Length: 358
Image 1 (cartoon, one colour):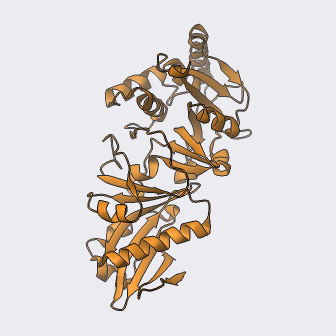
Image 2 (cartoon, one colour):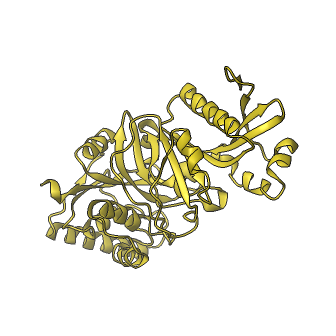
Image 3 (cartoon, one colour):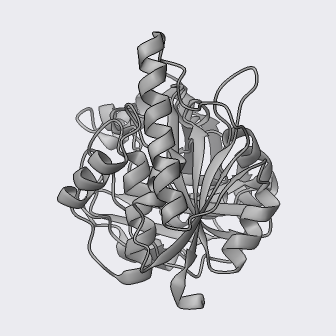
């Protein structure tokens, strides 16, 4: 796709990046910078937006995104003129509108050097993450919403263990409501309380939520033992049933409802509209091509787009907090993702209703 912008001598184009960079681009950005432009895995659909003037290549953007999402991220930027950079960004915006279904454009700025360029092109600064692991060191990120921007600010914290996604999702929700800072000590304490061999189950997350802040309700679409696919021995299943039973007993003592039925995304949207946040159990396969049960936090919804915070970052393949914070997902895609297990799969979630609304 090539476009000649009106009243300028700058032409722009969008192409797939491929596994190698064109020699013209390598010469422009420099051989030392080239590896960063190749970091993003093919799974994240890397594209190049190029702008040329009479002297040749004048600007380039590396654009990536997670699959099954509704955003694009400017991951790398090179330019030799502001006009060419603006032309490349304008091409990306035009392309996003033409494609449809893209709710936001993001801009990653590892050294916080591009803020003026981003602002000039309609981007606003994202709230910086809590430094908490790989993928949170990028100093700045910007976003340009192509539909209504989320009205709720939810802090971003990256999980620091393989299995603490549930506790971290809960802590992000609670921090948004109370303003309390998230720490690793909190993460590990909540993980130890709610560990469900090895991750956290929905009832345990509800039981150990801050009940001064939220009134949780659990929805599970099956009454069978859940999250037990890796348990092969009878004694392992027995331990799981004991843990589940204890979680359910405590939930009953705390008057936390547990409802065994399918909860739809229309209902999730309605809860969010009523100021709730929702912990969703998903399959990570759709984001990273790596199957695993995983918790995310849904905190905004508008025009068929959900906005979530995902505590996991695939930093080795170019993913960062700019991707994972305030991540927009179309309802049809989220409806595929919010399932776990096979033959049949089940849906598990925790609705967190603020006590302040009571």
